[in-house]
Length: 316
Image (tube, rainbow, N blue to C red; front, side):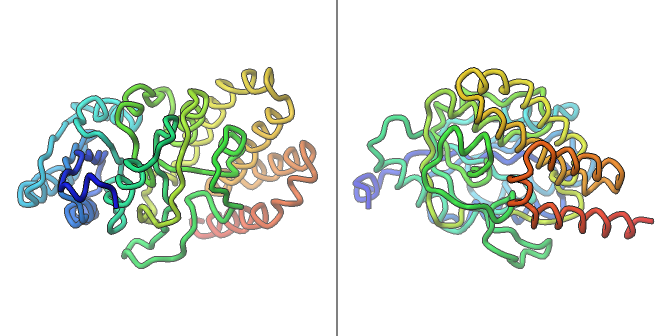
């Protein structure tokens, strides 16, 4: 145990909650923070112009937790990246975690991550990352997998492993050194944030420490962010435009793997759009681009096709 705990000194940890229309879940999210075994927490909740009762419920719940908190109310929906940038500028903690208002922090996550970060001597470590446990809408766990699926896991994150998604740290699973988080803002031109942020984190020579314990619980439900696949595909293509030439100048082989990774995950996204012809064309292009990698990923591609068929006939 770190000496800071022996001396009963706890560095302030800020927890950011971005909220948009999750009245059904936000109280549980706040409870997961209030129930942490840690003495010094603040909450910064930023509401992105919710149209339901989520903000009202959040205010009522925060008022009875006893946790210091700040509430930011956007006058209109700014998008997740702009909202996070606003919230990050308001936090006061030495460390910062981010948890979506429909998800949960894992028990004991904050104290564990702070202990790890306080005891690390490596100056370039900027964040402690833990895996995500997927849960059903009723909070029953499904399996201990990362958000993107059952990929080969490594404890040694690298630029190459991040741009090819062989390792996939997530904002939900991370506790950041706040100073670094303030320096590397989220790209407000993108719909979603995780991948682009960690690419830039790596480009700025910051490293990620992996903790094997579950850090957060990700809720599967029909209105989750991951269902807006059209915007996610657009964001991936923007990420390709941002980084492909930069990567190609350093490592052409890695650039090709980066390009394939984007096309592969866009194919996965197309399976949610019930567009059979578009999916088939993209699938053929993927196999022509890299037959070997496509054969390795055949199981995931077959799942994608099955998912497309199920969704297509479900909504007919």
